[in-house]
Length: 412
Image (cartoon, rainbow, N blue to C red; front, side):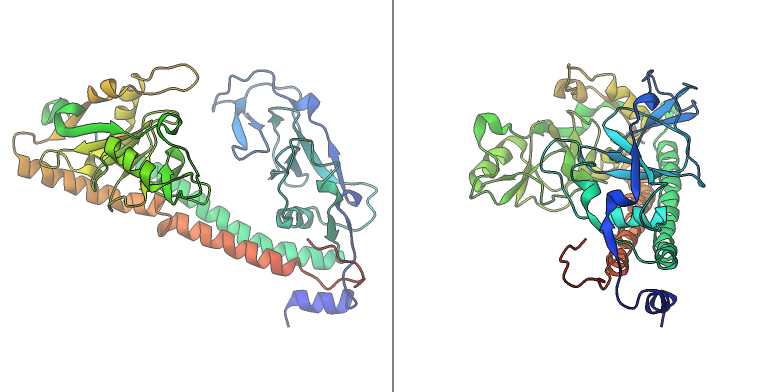
């Protein structure tokens, strides 16, 4: 019998009490902590937070109106519109008033461990259906199980083991990515006279893009079974459709391919919006095609390897060069004509066999780093995802209790 089972049998054998979340939690509006100067700089000291996915927006040097938190005095920042939230144990300022800072009530009706409440909140399955402030009217009125304090503390100890391991893996992944970027830039930076420099257009067969659905077809029709790939589906050098990816029918797929002419070995490049995401097509795209703004670069494989070109397009100095070509207003883009003029290095241009061998050597080294850092089926990202799923599984198990009053029917 585990320690947790022993505690439950000893302290609450008849079941667990539960009550509304607001009976143990209190909130503060962030009005006096909102940052005034949004010119962030990583050299500044105080982070500016949002409760959304970005979390840390940047750093400010404002010295007044700082919300004070620490490992001994943490807080949960809660987005009042999306219900996303974060555990924070350091001083900060906030971006807007669309959030609340949550702490335990001083006059709470039950004993509560703050970290336990945090894990319970993560276990609440709720998606807002309207764009209104959620904490007071909706979220705080969820009922939560409140076992005796020793039980809460044991659950926290177990669940924090999982989160600590995930944090360690995430820190390792960050370090690996920094190492990867360093070696990538080093391997792809050449002495000017040791390589041949040419325009991208000189080593490719074609540069095409997909179609805009507004002019040629409709998305997500009843017969739409194929994926319409955008920047969102280009992840870690691969094309990864999800259940949120838009769909197109066979007729639209054919129209898109007439424009893009996708083939194995083509390099996809996001030329609009989030610029510079890349992927190499490794299997014939039978059930997907690309939107306009995703460029399909067809390399001349006798001169440049597809993966070598993809890595070049992600090198820091090459990205700096093509970002200077960006144009547009709200939505930025690189004109295809300007991308064709991009200057890139080709090792040993006078000896094609030697050049391709050197390109392959560099690709082989970078592939090993890339798999470790970006592969969602292997490497650290896969390990992190597995640990997260493990945490969620045990969180659900550990936070499911026998109710003290069987007549009640509320469940987390």
